[in-house]
Image 1 (cartoon, one colour):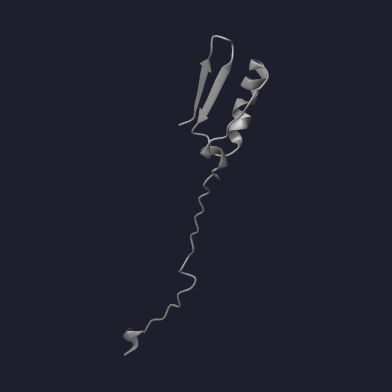
Image 2 (image 1 turned 30 degrees about the vertical axis):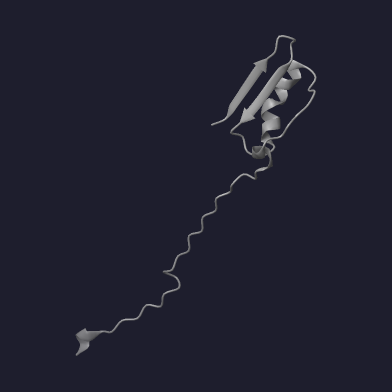
Amino acid sequence: METLEFIIYPDGRVQEKVTGIVGASCAEVTAAIEAQLGQVVSQEPTSEYFTQPLQQAASVQSIAAQVQTSYSDWSSQ
């Protein structure tokens, strides 16, 4: 689940925490918000930032084309 958490301090600073977004795409998600908030003073990437998104691949191979069909004709006897 993607979550953005904001802590607003009395002096006006805003701390933003992003969880549930794998890889650098969190920067795309937060760019517009950060532009509205003002200057970004620091960033601390989490372990999720350095995680590579999982890619699933499926391969279906037809074995029917690989099987040689043979039969005997018993009816001619």
